[in-house]
Image (cartoon, rainbow, N blue to C red):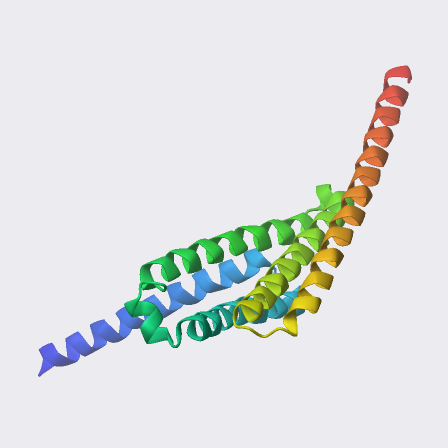
Length: 186
């Protein structure tokens, strides 16, 4: 009986330790992507991310007469799905981490304030366009004009943001050069 109680105690402590490690890892990953500082942006990206997969499944279902038929006809593969899912998840984690650290790093305060919104904006546009393309593929024709408009807005957004970044970088470089000249003269 004492052996059973000892095993029970061991497994309870072991599971408790695993839960604590899992919580610490999730907390660290959440900090890296900016939670809770940019919680609204993260929720919006997550909603678009999940809806992209759901609309992709719907498009595959409509195009093939069902998910089962798509799987049988090799139009849908669970291995390809998981490879895409893992790649997209890792890519988004890297982008969100860069956006977060660019916005909170004091040395990057000027440029980071521009880089972060560009990265978040890129994710919103990418996911929005992907969702609309999936709906278009599912023969939801009302998505086509919205998709075309969103693509035009994406081009405008990136043109404006790139010109803003060029201006800020030029200003920072000129300030650094003038400070270096002043130090060399003084």
